[in-house]
Image 1 (cartoon, rainbow, N blue to C red):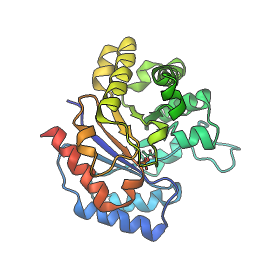
Image 2: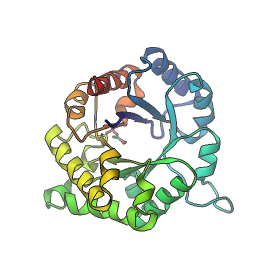
Image 3: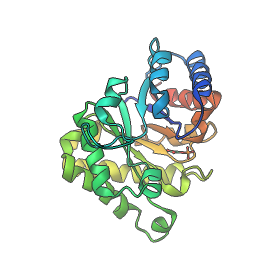
Image 4: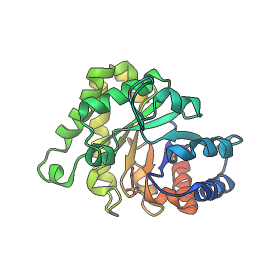
Length: 254
Ligand code: PEP
């Protein structure tokens, strides 16, 4: 049984006081020991504050990005070791906003994934197709390439503690959601691709769905056998919405 994971990607939102208020709302409403792993991914500069506020809880801390260098002349960047140093356990890699807005190509995403693992972080590799690619019937090809390019650089062994997030680009922040059947079909394809490289890894790897997951559609998505949790953007910025999604994931464990 894979432990469901619900991760809140806060993107570039909030302030110090809003970060505190959101964490307070989540920690005070969250049931402990439900068998669901909960993760928040705040803005870099609020990680230390978040670590302090989460210290007495089981909520995990992660970052939204990293730079694949150790240390040195990389102005403005943050390394995996630094993230580990401030208490992060996870890091997003290859989020579609990074791939499109910041032009991150397959080699850079793969290098980030490898650097995350080397720093002792669990990477959450985000993959997904655009609307155009889906309409052209290229969904599987696109995702296969996004995963294969990482396997080539980091090796399949690097996926041991990693997570994959299937995030159809057309569903991120748009209010559109893949149907549970559409999402399940892609998740199964991803698991089969991992199985072609390593059968046991495919059984253990968690594959999250992301793309306008909300309180009212989470249960149906999470009920699918290959959907092991959610990567939540907009709905993670409201404690009650996020908690409702966490609650929907508890049903997967019962
Ligand atoms: C995301 O950014 O990873 C995401 C899934 O966003 P949203 O839930 O807002 O679609």
